[in-house]
Length: 333
Image (cartoon, rainbow, N blue to C red; front, side, top):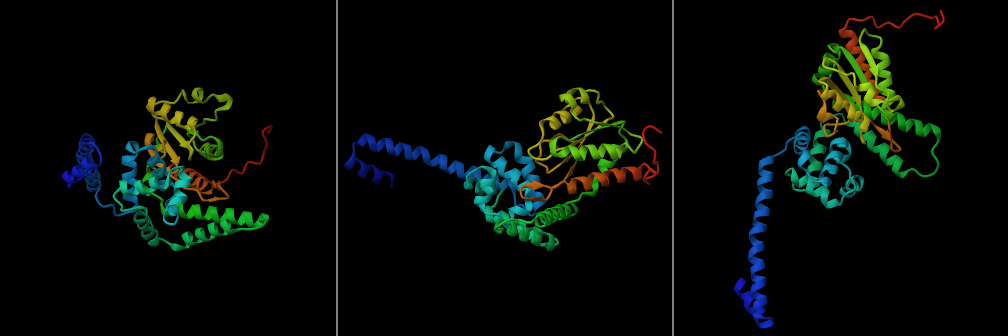
């Protein structure tokens, strides 16, 4: 076939041109075969992925080696598991800021024939769970997308309540007893507990400090007052625990405190939104929360719930009296 191409080209062009083209064809063929072989070997090495949890673990293991665009898709898939099974490829690509072909390449990278094949696995996984929260979420999303005219205050409130309920359902469905028990033990044996959460996570951090101060533990809020995060975390030491609360896009102040804790030999308990969170990769233990959202505003209901449960479980372990204080006097009494 190559010789016939040469004869044709010789009649039309100069023989030298034909030889150059033949050489390019010969050089390209092995490269293409090699690329195909590499892709096939990569898929064979991955093996068949049988569950969502297994896929997330594969993504976590391979995350650092993924190209930048595929990392964006990986983060989206890990943090929006319910959305993945019904979102269009173009919608996911738009949310990630990548071309739709990157979404398809991501699925193929982990052994799927295409992104619809990956979505099928998510659909089957969630079909085995309680369908009520999922279908309700779909109705709420459709309601928001198709809403015309002005919303009443009550309608806005109900959609936020529904989003919070949805997040709590996700928290219950994905609750890990082993990780929660590990977190309790860490706090139980901590000499000092430092808690950091900035911006939208600050209310949760301050509440957790308030609650933990009802125990005999030495508890410190890393507030960053006066921009003194470094100074406030500097005294952390071996035997202490730093509780770090942060969600995408992840506060650099919180990440700094987690790394500082590691450098000083302290343990870290991270409350974040998934395994691909940069904080999770530096944590001694972690608890995952995926909040519901309405009108692009994320709730805090699930995170507060988890932290309240963490305090009460710790207090129960320490055999504390959890009754509300009956003191009625003021500061001047």
